[in-house]
Image (spheres, rainbow, N blue to C red):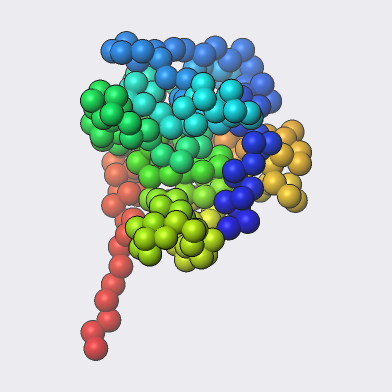
Length: 264
């Protein structure tokens, strides 16, 4: 629960804090070419170690005006369709893709549902699985439900040390299980959503360390740690044949949730 509290802090670094520290000549792209642009999901191309890379990221805010502008970090369908457009573009030009996950979940308002929120997320899951270019994902803060999964299908997934990744928030868990959202703290200790938990389950491939007290204590050091993971992962994935990536990705995800039962 201490991590839940930490992630709720408006002082925690967001993708807009990390972009100038990680990439050169970053150019943001807008719009899904169907409906509109979604400020809750950022996409563009920059240079990492002087090589072009496509960046897709969910955006967090530092104040109430930021939060309102980005719909409290809950993307609409057009955000996910923008992400897919950029991934297909990256595949065409043989650029790797780096996704930053940081959302409590996809927006579930009437307009989002009318424009096909569920279909947009499902389409991303399918297309990200099949894309023939390296895809990496990092959970920066909160990775919530399908809204996170929509840009989380990747060859390798890392989590920041204090990040959380879950099918539902602790408050939502408590509200469903006990009909009492006030038991959020109790739920947080039960549902195994920390980076260490996800690493032990084989869902998270690596944990990126943060300074003592969280990423906000030293943004430059945190960015250096992120860059080190991206660099080593890119080096590994660039040696793969593009045609082999979808099958390896598929086999990786087929292993999730495997369990065995002991007979009595």
